[in-house]
Length: 209
Length: 213
Image 1: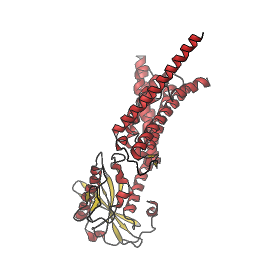
Image 2: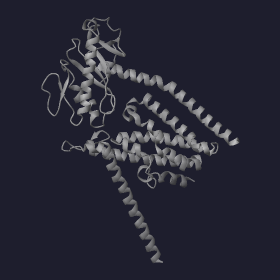
Image 3: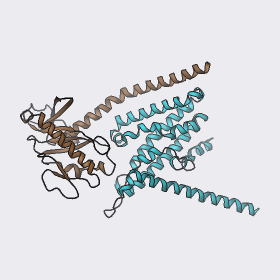
Image 4: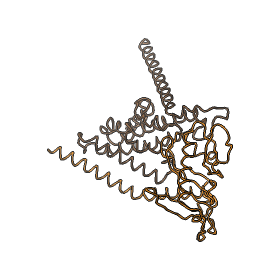
């Protein structure tokens, strides 16, 4: 009997202490983790819309899905394009991108990888500058395409990474899905309405490389 | 005293070097060692959890009744791993991103529970600290070595610095899971070869000494 009480107390004390430590650390770490995510998101917006100095957030609910578009504006408040997230399955997990689209909805302004679990050394090369660079100025109409082993021939094509076709394809597919959703739900005139000039130009644009 | 502490420490570096000799902790050894930096970071996170959890286990070894020791150890280890995970995500988001799901998996790294069972619960705090630091350092060295070999062969670089020129065609298999098994097998064979040579030499020397009498 005594032993049962001791076992019981042992586990209760260990569990309670563990809970106390975890909640203490969590209350400190959670705001920092959230701030890191937020900062990463902001930086990505300024990377894909290099001429933006600030952005306004637009939200729309379509069915069960919530669409968020970040409308980039320059120092005088005139729109420079929109940024939005493009998520979808890759080779091993979600491939999350931030995509910048110009104000006519015709060409991409940039692409940044927010999250990916692709194979190190193969699929994760979608994060490389050389690959991301291909999306600058790319035509989104009729849609973005990829080709293998040779240089792109049309203005809407990129070259897939050798040995990582599935990851390259995931990027292209996610961009096409997200672009068509944005075009269908956020009319051009709404996204081209000037905004009031940003109070102080945020400096993230210079920080993001 | 200092001598025996040093012995507890150094045994982790060769005689009981975790992945190659104890053959423990193989999941992280195989999974995260596709570059030297990943191996090093995983090793550091593991030594943190290993050290603090085993010192704690050694502290409370007389208070915990033996029937519930395993659940108690698991709670301690899991708490420390969660703390390490949150700390990395809050302070070093880049490393946290690179290691991804592997940090939570330290919970099931058998080195930690293995050392708690085999050493910490039978020894006082100081020898336990020496033991875990030795085993942990051995683990860091093994993971960095494996990561280094795979990175050189698979990317032609080490710690992200290009080592081999354009002529080098990277062996992509080395950074894929199959490469982990190839390098691991090679290293286990090498370690066994070296120690069997050592044992043979020692036996020879003993025989010679016996004849010399």
